Amino acid sequence: MKLPKISVIIPTYGREKILIDSIKDVLKQEYSDFEVLVIDQTQNHEPETENFLADLANAQKINWYKVNWASLPGARNYAVRRSKGDIVLFIDDDVKLEPNYLQAHGKNYQENQEIGAVAGRVFDRMKLADFATANADTSPYTIDYLPEAAKDPGIAWYYIDLVHTTKPQQVISARGCNMSFRKEIFTKYNIWFDERFRGSAVREESDFCLRLRKTNYKIWYDPEANLVHLGEETGGCHDISTRSLKYQFTFYHNHFLMALKNLTLTQQIRLYIKLFDCHVLGNPPCNKSGSPIKIISRFIFYILGFINALWTQTKGLWDDGQIYTKLDLKNS
Image (cartoon, rainbow, N blue to C red):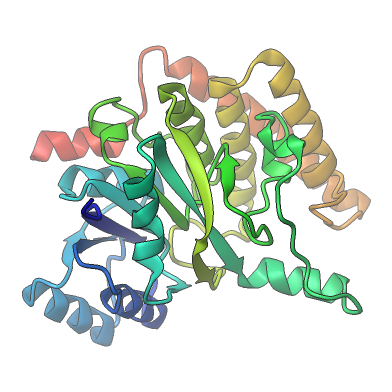
């Protein structure tokens, strides 16, 4: 059976040299049939980057789309509507790839028709460094299979370790910097990324995957489909700085919105407790500062995020929030 055509989608915002390197790695792929779509949300690139992208677009090596807004889920949806592949694959704009990366994703769809999505392994520079620092006297940490808790939508988000896990297995979600889907998830089942997820759009991929699971397609984790995520602090998918107060607010909003949309009341309560314990109190695996001032500050954002998510969900009764999709369709 022929391997499927893959559309590689790269949303980008505020990146220069690292974006160039990421695209070069994609173009070096040893795969017979793929296209590259760059959704560029950067208003003013450095001349070197602008010329690089223009040259590749003119040579028809990439499809370069410049938009005048910044939204990760909006950029994903925008690209899917323009993609020609049977599989749409999303990566970040700060990654390193081996030449067999696309092959590792594509073979899963060829071998098993029950697979609707592939979650790849992420060698996350920051997470690997954090573990090495905390465990300087131990050998490299790996696990074969995820614990049962990783299957519970209420608390799974603290147990889905797609950095250190080494065995293929079914999972409930993927990481946004390394995930692929059958295009029919969008076109046949009408499941799209929710553009109400803001900031770096944390949990937008979790929300999407929870809705995808209702199609009975499997989400399959394949550690061979791996990449290195450099995890730059600024740019990329972020429309706001991860160190800003606005980001803290939207971080909690996005978690609560995912829960309100997809989880049962019991699952929601478990998530809210774990979110409070980890991100507000700073207990493991978050390991945040235990300073009373920091805890109070995080608690305020926790409460404000919940209230705002309630409003977002309520507003959804008459406004689905797909701002960028509607703008695109109106202009097309």
